[in-house]
Image (cartoon, rainbow, N blue to C red):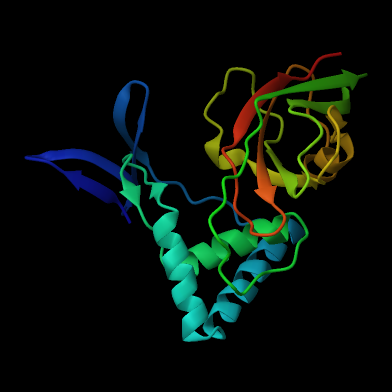
Amino acid sequence: MAKIKYSALVSDVRNKLNGSVMSKNRYGSYMRNKTTPVNPQTTFQQNVRAQLAANSQAWGGLSEAKREGWRALAAELPFTDIFGDSKILAGNSLYNKLNGNLNKIGKASISDAPIKISVPSLLTFSVAAVAAVNVLTSLTLTFTPTPIPAGYSLVVYATPGISPGRNFVKNQFRLITAIAETTASPVNIFTAYSTRFGAPAEDQKIFVRVALVSNDTGQQGIPLEAVAIVTV
């Protein structure tokens, strides 16, 4: 469904409406034809859907007191919507979001709303991709502070190999791995990446996004992104 922001006249329109998609880039607002993406039904996709379904079902089994706790926490954790306005998630949405984060790092779901915490973020982050005979051999993340703080995991998303001239990759990020607490930089995620995407060609770009996630609450810090060009 398209989202419209009204002023005296319409000032911004986002998302989808019938066969059109409305968005904005550095040059201003634009509209394009809507395309239907392929539904690959991969193992990764099916696992995510199963986790979401399980968390949604678990929400219905909570006591009203516990659900109210999640609504109260949601009020303390506003988010910025597509227009840059501050919004508050519904209690069940926050429950699914934090438990989804915990599932990504291999931790058990929680039923009681945690307290709001200040999640740290990485200060610096870079990525290097090296290939030999046109086959990726290493994808190394370097970050500070190091090691990863105790009580947190580093969740890692990446894109498949992208054409060097392309920079808009928002819909291409996929979960690659989660790096455990106290792991020191640098970290080679080549095996996890190649398992998900295979080997990108030389000179292609790989975009990587990382964020710290609390092992206890699922709350996430501000993500950082970096890009590497596959080199030999």
